[in-house]
Image 1: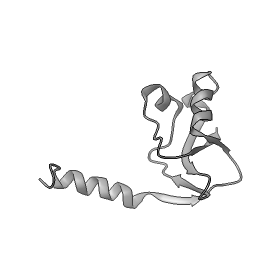
Image 2: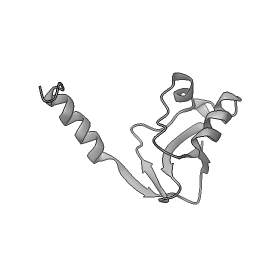
Image 3: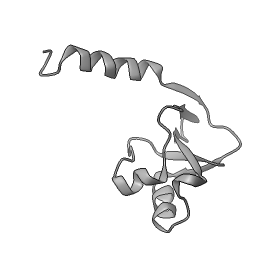
Image 4: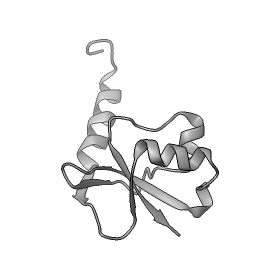
Length: 93
């Protein structure tokens, strides 16, 4: 154990961080703040079938391109939204 964490857990966590890819925010999709996304989901504006989102930082102009773990409206209901990001880019089906 390293600092109370098993080495295998550290390796898995590091490999996930290395695999993350960042891209410029595209001109398609709907850029919205985390709050706007949460409000829209809570109002019934988005459901999982409608599409998916990707975390973004509008100041840096980058989007996390992680198709293994897209942002889904059900994540709002489950409390799984990562509030370390400022925005979400929403892509309709």
